[in-house]
Every structure is written in structure tokens, then in C-alpha cells.
Amino acid sequence: MSKTIEDIKALVEPTRIHRSLYTDPDLFNLEMERIFERTWVYLGHESQVREPGDYLTVNVGRRPVIMVRDKDGNINVLHNQCTHRGAKVAGKTCGNARAFRCCYHGWTFKTDGTLIGVPHKDGYEQTNFDIKDPAFSLKVVRSENYRGFVFANLSEEGPDLKTFLGDAASSIDNMIERSPEGAIEITGGVLRFRHNCNWKLFVDNLNDTMHPMVTHQSVGDACQAYVDELPEGAPKTNEADIISPFGSSYQMFDEMGVSVGPHGHAFTGGEESIHSNYMDIPGYMESMEATYGPEKARQILSINRHNTIYYPSLTIKGAIQSIRIVRPISVNETEIETWTFRLKGAPDEMLHRTMLYSRLINSPSSMVGSDDLEAYVRLQEGLMSGGTEWVDMSRFIGREEHPEGNMTRAIGTSDISLRNQYAAWLDYMTHEKEVA
Ligand SMILES: [Fe+2]
Image (cartoon, rainbow, N blue to C red):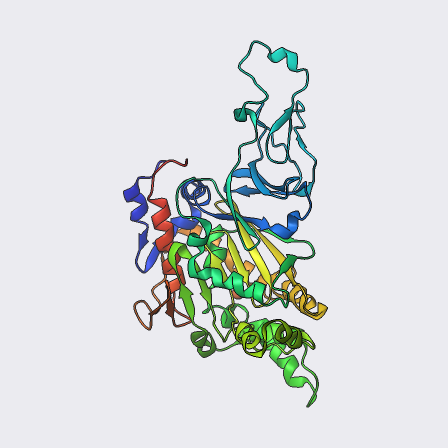
């Protein structure tokens, strides 16, 4: 059933949204067309394609693309679709290729997309086919790289990447500055698993600070009991440092604050967050001071944001150097990828803590993320029922909000991040222009 602009506008009010945003397959298809296939979507980090020929494949919305480094060192983003009969020319999620040779009829493309080989070519004499015609090359997708973070945009319209990220880009800056060499790289593999829920339920949750003390109560209590039983003067553990804050009070989350900006972007936390009381790792501060000087090093490490959302596809935790990527599959299925970064020049213990955080909080077997997954699945099933038609997001509307650069800052347990996301959602969804 087709949806008019008026139909869509009727689903989003200032303090509530209609449940069908999470359950209607038609809206999901429109989201792919009007959001994921028309704005900046995160692909990967440049350190994943370090050598010429290194590539990875992902979907931008529903369209498969290849991010590949060519022999000149440039990172290209190409449609992963043979210009002969349309098969995906790269079949694996990542690898190294001198060229992409289609598995079906052997058409072969360079890593910049140029067609270089067609078997039994004389059959094309006296046809329109010309191997030098760019129409037969893999189509190049608009892409940009912000400090190593590569995004693609299937539309030629709209702002450049830096403008799109706006002041929220400072969370990426801070993650990079946390390296004593000012450089980071993806290390280790990916945690990739399917969530049986709409993609927006995951994104909604990132800056939801009213759920941890409820959803994560059991693990928070268990962790606190463990800490209470430690003998006087016993050393703290990284595990307790990481898990304990998930049981924090409403007051702590209020004080953490939340900032929202254009295009639906947002971050929770400032100097205070669930990451701000980790114990020092020997040698790290010294290496930071050696690079930046004591004052600048302290200033960098005083920024302890929790989740930053680059709506709709990328979420980062700069203070713990991990990212999660949102890859929608269908109206009630979403793949979430977690990747971890090494801070170049930092002690190995920093990377160990990052990995530990991912195992404890974000992995399928974690003690915290599995609580969230339970909530997402219950949300998806509950929202299908229709007993209540609307989803509330009214908390703290219009109260304790103030401008901060091109963003707005509010009390941490405000629903402002939800209201901001759905304002962006409505903006994207009610523009019917064609994708270029
Ligand atoms: Fe949670």
C-alpha cells in the first residue's frame, strides 16, 4: 500500500510516534529508499583496507557496495553489481583482490571499477558494447572519508560529509586524540549478530538513560555485591569498573546530560558518563602527556561521552574506542556489528580493556547487551499487538534545554534524543525527490 506524505506526517507528533514506524514493511521499504539510500551511511574504517586490493562489502540500505583500496592508494566505493547480467562481483564480506572477476561470465573489473576483461569478446562486434565505455564500468558511489571513517551516499544531493556530521564529529576527533600518536586502527574481528527487532529500536536505546537501572538491574546488583565483598584495600577490577555504572542512579544519568544536533545526531555524557571513573592504566597518561603536554592531555581525557549516534547508521563510544554499526535487514530484523579500535602508541592494556568492554557489554553472550536484546524483542512483539497505538517520547520536553554550538544540550534523562531522531526521520521520509 502506498503512503502519501500526509499519511507519514500523521504518524509523528511532537511527543509521540505511531507504533507502525516499527512494524509496517511499507514504511521499512520507504526508509531504505528515503533515508539509507539518500544520506551518508557508514561503510568502514580505512585501516580495514590498508593494502592495495583490500576490500570489504556492505549494503547501503538494500544496495550492495564494495569499499576497496586501489593500486594508487585511493579508497573507492563501487556498486557491487556486474554491468553484464547484474551479479555481485565480490561475494565475500572482505578480502584482497587484484581485480573483481564476476563468477557468472567472467567479466573483470579493476579496483577503480574499470572494465578490463570480457571473455569471447568477438560476439560483441556490431553491437553497442564497447569495453572502454564507462557505462560498462562498475558504478562509482559518492563517498567521503572523515579522519579514516568512510561513508557512502547513494544520492548526489545533500551536504558534504563534514557538514552532515556537524559538531557531533567532535566525538570522532576525541577518540582519535585519545591515541598518543593521534591515530587509531581497527583491531581484531567483528561481533556481528542479528537482532529480531526494527533497526530504530536499537538506535532509540543508545541514548535511553531511563532503562539501565531497570533493564540491567540484575547484573548491576550482582556486580555491586561482588564489589562490596572485596576485602578492604583489594585492587579494583576492569570488569567491575565496566559493569558497575550500568546500575547507576537516575540522578547520575540526569547529570550526564545529552546533546542533540541536526540530521538526528546526538551524544550522551560529557565529562561525566558511565566511562568516566575507570582506573588509570599504567603508562597511558605519561604517553599522552609526552605528546600533548599535561594540560591538553587532561582536556582530551576529560571528554567521556557515552554513545554518539551519527544517525542512522553509525554509533560510537569514543571513550572506550568501540563502534556499533546498524545494518537493517527487514522491518523486524537488524544486524548490529561491533568493531574495536587500538589507540596507536597506547599501552596494550588499553586495547585489552576495549575488548573486555565489547565482550561484557556488546557481545551476544554479554551480561548487559543480552538484557537490551530481550527488551528489543519484547518491544517488537508488543508493538505488533496494537493494544496501544502510540509510543511516548515526552519526557522533559521544552525543559532545561540550552544551545551548545550547533547542538542543543539537555538533562540526561530527557527524551530529546528521540524527539530529535524522529524529527530527522520525518524530514527524510517526507521528501519524495528521486535519488540521483
Ligand atoms: Fe541497555
